Length: 77
Image (cartoon, rainbow, N blue to C red; front, side):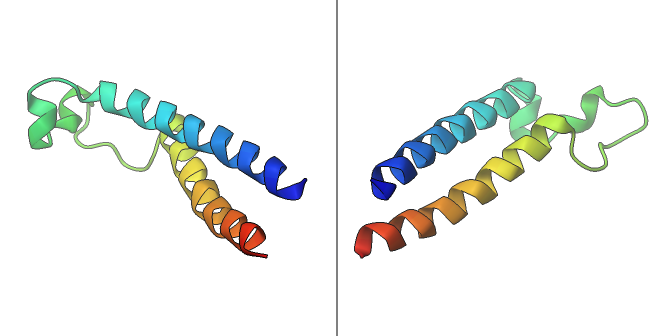
């Protein structure tokens, strides 16, 4: 039962991470974004730090990494 719950949570986190990465990619979808000109839309130079969506993406990536280890540990027992 615990394995099924962990797999469902793992799947939800994975889908959320895919969604957030795709949302981040649309910000720099122009031709210049391929060459690193993501700072073209900032007023005072490059962006410093992460915005809210960037923080959510990092949190989902960390949660996905932890869930990978936790799920594999539970399934191996």
